[in-house]
Length: 136
Image 1 (tube, helix red, strand yellow):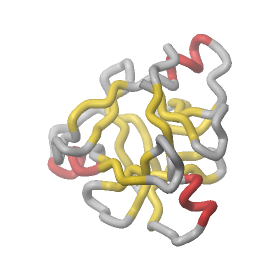
Image 2 (cartoon, rainbow, N blue to C red):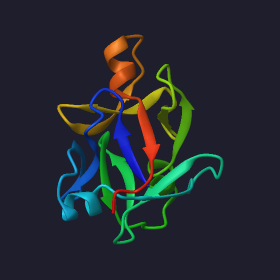
Image 3 (tube, rainbow, N blue to C red):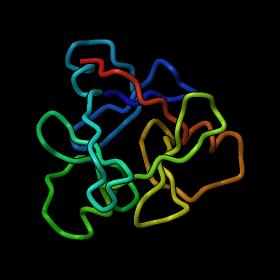
């Protein structure tokens, strides 16, 4: 699957090194880097975790989303678990951190980060994503 921005519909979560950015997927390698597998949340099976093609998981560290190998720790499992929440945008979800309730994944300056919820239209758009068929 791929994760598309609501307010930049031509941009997807994409690995850039080990970081997750919001970028256009306009080449075969970019489409590959923008395709993930959604699995049951490592810390809560009613939530989601995401894996990249190389077996790494997307997790937040220092509130920045990145891909890392699972070290088996409780902290890693929590950092790599995101719970879908309703979005004000049709067909989209907001992804709340399992271990930082009230913080959601959002893009800012095209980098995907974990930030506290804000009652603001721009924040809600930046934190709303559509889970779509994989681009790879």
